[in-house]
Image (tube, rainbow, N blue to C red; front, side, top):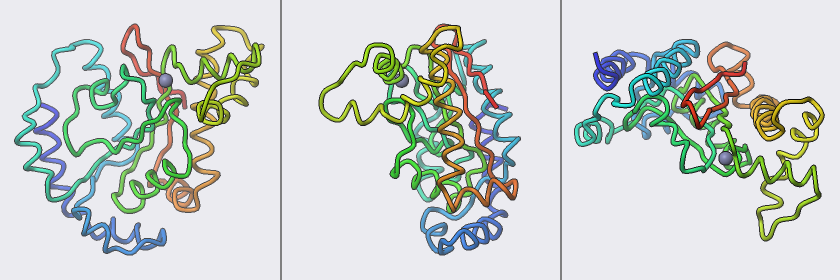
Length: 240
Ligand SMILES: [Zn+2]
């Protein structure tokens, strides 16, 4: 069964999970109404199953670049009335790291994605993740750093040579600087290690700063995993 067909089967089963998802949303402080407005059905994948599905998709991407040809027209019709994404991805804006592709050619309605340079979690991204977890019932959050990240490289240059950047670029990369400082003398490639450390710290910050997501993690309903994407080989390494 191709991934799209599998997803459709999962979505049909997930329809039965609506009541449970509404209960989660309500307990997290959201009205159950937005879930209905957003389409109602949520995924029935557990956090571990969602993570396994991402791993399998990335394996497919690495071993067979000719991934399942998506029927985008059919998918659009299938999800137009509502969405049931099964993983949230905080990814870099870098043009080489589109999550839907590197996790195996996923289609419409599968991933809930927030992207910015450096895959950072600001208020907007945190609210996005909270909506995904509490209202859409997304069981997995991945903070995805990547090889040769320009934002992390910039933060590393702040550490090594006190570099400055114009406009909002400097303030944007500031949250990466503590991670870079922490691994500066750790050995290995500085940018690579800083990227992994920043992803770990960002993942930890989601729980520390979100009163919506923290109890879902505590209850085992949501898992947060930092990860690192290798541009050369295509492999995603999950760091947790
Ligand atoms: Zn990047």
